[in-house]
Image (cartoon, rainbow, N blue to C red; front, side, top):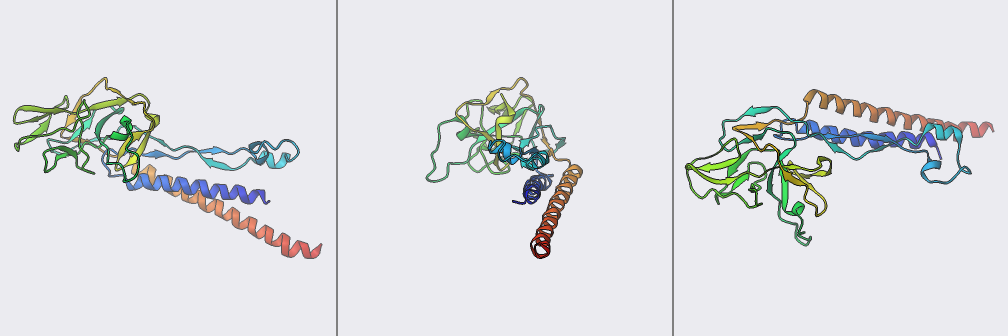
Length: 268
């Protein structure tokens, strides 16, 4: 086994993963309420340690080289983005970074279990672009998910008059309160996972939601993407360079093996 070849290959694989994560962040630099992913790496143990083969197969020189790198679990940064005005009376931005709007989950795929946990029925989002659909329900402008109240019920605007949302999250139409936005916090943001469509969910039956200490919203505003475009671009460039460097090492090891087989073996 060419140990250096495997180390270089691990560099290509893990940095290709980083490249994909950073490219996705860059692609969402204009997505309202988007939270960027953090791609991290961790050192891989030497083969003798990882396989617990013992001292019989251990090689001091190779063990000092390590086992290359592995991709660590991806984390999400929930740092708040800048607020920008929209002029839309149904748009809202959340004042605190650890709070979310609760919306209806997409229907379960045909043939898959529907599930009975809150995580299977509810999604969380920071995208506060809201509108009203043809049936009168308050929905997210992106994806058309129905917005939920504090009882996990869709908010219905029964009238046809103009509607708006006040700073306490109350949905008001024709001077009457039609519903109350569910602005919720979570017990542990590290347990949230992205569910597509700028939505978050969680695994397991334990509900991560808890009442928000401050449920104030900013009507007529939305939260910009949390991606710094300059930093995201630099991250993509840096990951691309790392992929190229590791690929060059594979090429060098290939040349060394070629000489070992076709040149040095002839001399021997």
